[in-house]
Length: 260
Image 1 (cartoon, rainbow, N blue to C red):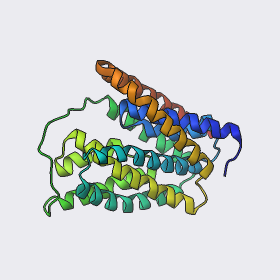
Image 2 (spheres, helix red, strand yellow; image 1 turned 90 degrees about the vertical axis):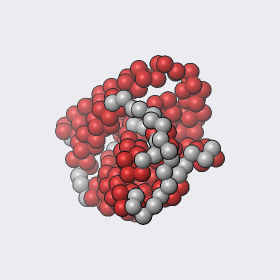
Image 3 (spheres, rainbow, N blue to C red; image 1 turned 180 degrees about the horizontal axis):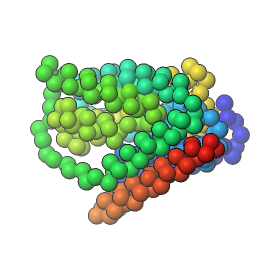
């Protein structure tokens, strides 16, 4: 477990940045956690970076979930079925990732980052729909979607919100706002499952997880008033953020192919 002050401070700052960006622009910010851990904090093992990032994402999702749950925005039956089946997929996906060489895993991760960046460039529509109730006809779609998205989330060690939200909308018919709130149950479950799997191999540094969590709380508190001020500039900010993710993805790919 890391106890040196400088890496812990850098982890606090990294966690704060990730949470700030998530608060301002929604899904996608968690993919920056792994590059920050590797190239800012100084983690040398890509598997440790993935394990720590997954744990941090899970804890931050629980913090955000508490607020949405109190406001009654979470559709618990759909959220629970999606999260349970997805957690099983996350265990399978993370087990496959653990068997892959670290630099090869980073190269694959860079492609996942690029996919997140591209998805953020697509305009999202907040259609008004009647909120769904889980039923027997809907359940198979939710199970299949949860298992598929959970596997991808576990493999890449990211929250997967950019996949979970559209999957919930497609499989249940819920609105964008409800899917965003409900998705946090799965983000927390997938991250915890992935982190637990990595912890079994000794690839979770609890000191760094704690530092990133502290930073995440600070970043969220700072981001909330800023998010309210963005207003009409939110779309431009999201586009710039997507561009940043694409640039970081290219950098990660370059470092992975050069073996550094």
